[in-house]
Image (cartoon, rainbow, N blue to C red; front, side, top):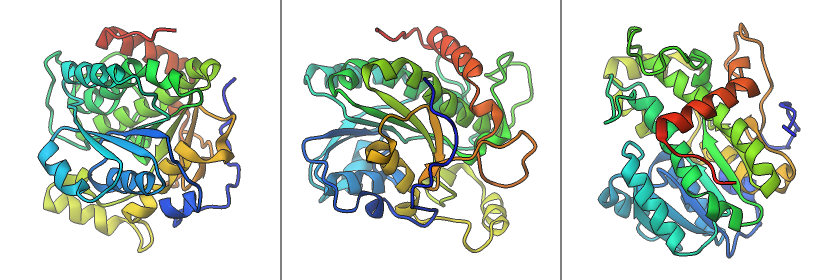
Length: 316
């Protein structure tokens, strides 16, 4: 049964940090996988989880860069993974499954934003391929390890950017329509939210719950594809308290992955360390989750498409 999309009044807020979310709670003996866990919000997520005692596996596309960023952190294991390459995803998953270990927390954190039109080897648009399909394939491949945890959580980073676009099921990879990098980004972030919704339906019978997260507006390496002019415009657009620090940006992810406040819940979009408010399509404020990102019928349609695109299906 899908959780009602409505705030639960967690007691936290937009300025809460990931460390404050955890408080004195320990995660000893638990295993987390954090994609992109070596930069920005992902690095802070890794840092907080490992400090609380969890073993954190960080799959990285650029291991040398990741090794430098993660130096000195305890219980952190570096692995190689490129979400843009299906064979790399399968290879990482196979290596992990061979270890026989469970995964208690899978944080699908990595992503790209507003990139020029690039296609993967299958011809798929890069933002949908990386942000959604890469994590779809990864999660499905790691399903046996998630089931082994007997109470796992999967947290996938969406974004307020989902407001920009629903899924265009007629032309998702911009084969006929004019490419717009922001529409493509919005579509991929809507896909992240719908993925969590459909995954939770499949996971709940196995005590696997799924969440999607808007971490907040944070100026990290995610903006690396933007020009200086675009970056200045973005910085000028928000009020003084609009942007979060990485420590604040990681709070909702860590909350979704660990908090007992969410026991028995799942399939919801979260922001500012709470379940987000469902808002109508024409809602003007920069908060809440739009209808096209919380529709179970659309989520199931996307799941079916994703299976066909990747050739990967969930084993019950």
